[in-house]
Length: 106
Image 1 (cartoon, rainbow, N blue to C red):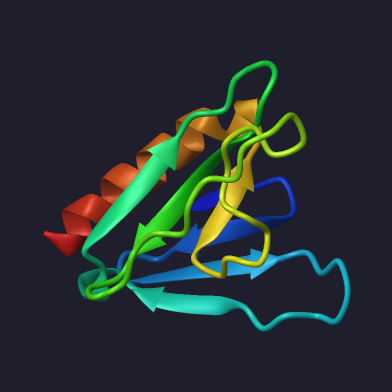
Image 2 (cartoon, helix red, strand yellow):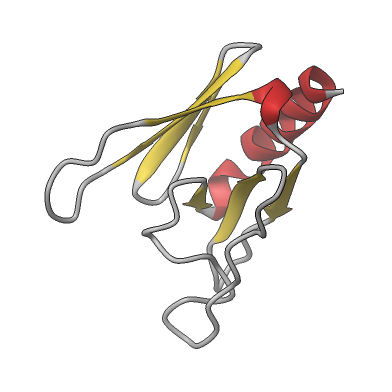
């Protein structure tokens, strides 16, 4: 299951989540997350004006806050390795991915 984001993709194979971001500078390594290790997911659907996001939360950590302003539209920053901004056309795929991750987590 794949979700195409604004600057990257999220892939889920039933156990592992892989977030691959398109580099703005040096090429970052893909983030691999085991679904069973998560305490939660955050999903904000995109609108016509602003991108949404998918974010994964770990035990003992707080979720990266949303940046406000016209340029950010209430999304976590690009540097957050556990989240990815999504365009409006990816809302359905992102919703299905979040549901699959929640089912695998539980």
